[in-house]
Length: 126
Image (cartoon, rainbow, N blue to C red; front, top):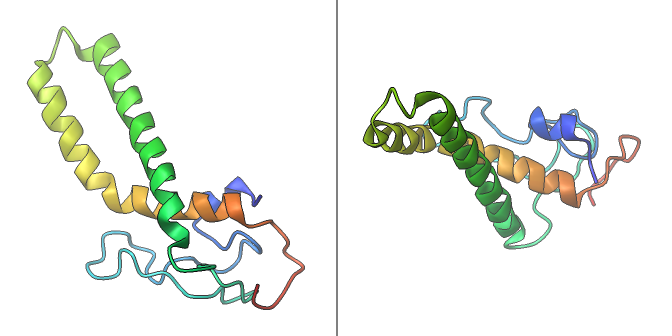
């Protein structure tokens, strides 16, 4: 298992030096999902096989559910008496749509972290 630091910084799970994504801006049109094939520092091939990142959908689901629980608890404890529930639902949907590129990237990064061991001394494709 890799380090959480590398996953949060969207870096290679093996060496924590190479970038996972071609563009650092998750909202850059056409480049949101573009990942490097290999790490520029250690040469690790990110996609091990076809469909490797399907597992990241479970991580994405987990992140979305955590966001839902946090916002719902926040609404019930702080805003329930001050805001109409329709405003809460509309705000939640808007924020969820706005966060899709970020959640997408972090779900893939966390999936890689879970599947690849942190070994900064290794070099070469594997």
